[in-house]
Length: 181
Ligand code: IMP
Ligand code: MG
Image (cartoon, rainbow, N blue to C red; front, side, top):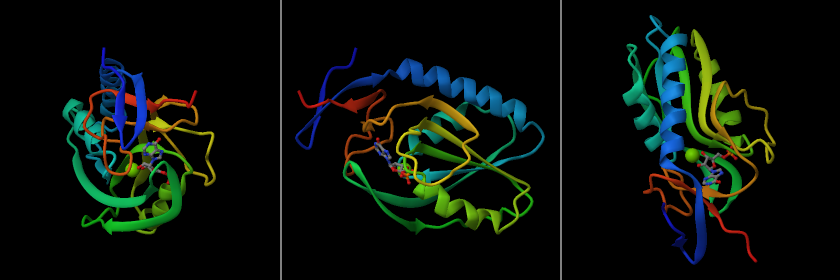
């Protein structure tokens, strides 16, 4: 069992185990195998946070599929800044393609709310969103979420790709910020 983690002076405790993540990711891959068989989908993973989720999921898929990456950022510390920056854009033509966005977590919804219209403008055959973690409570912008591994309450989490000010991505389990006593 992993123990407490201290990062940049804050304490984090285990929240979702590597085993639970693995099970959900495998189940999602099986569902996507079914839903996208013969459609040659293009997965678009949003860096940085989704890199581990995207790698785990993609390894489990057995259908013919492509993956590409873009880099959007809207977070500073443990609070969303509300500004979305495209640091690395999309270099693939998505016209008439079946697109699945891979995101680590949806919080306010700002990131995808501002990015999805850019994709719709390029007329994909379909556009769906798959997330590792959905945090519906702090939602401020409407975002359609089609595939969800875990729905979580409004807490700050890290690990398995998710960071706190750039650090803490390198764990197999997901941790939550320990409540102040
Ligand atoms: P949104 O635009 O507010 O939906 O925020 C989405 C982005 O904020 C995610 O892609 C994450 O990178 C980051 N984020 C939101 N909540 C958390 C969290 O609890 N831990 C780490 N990063 C988070
Ligand atoms: Mg992210």
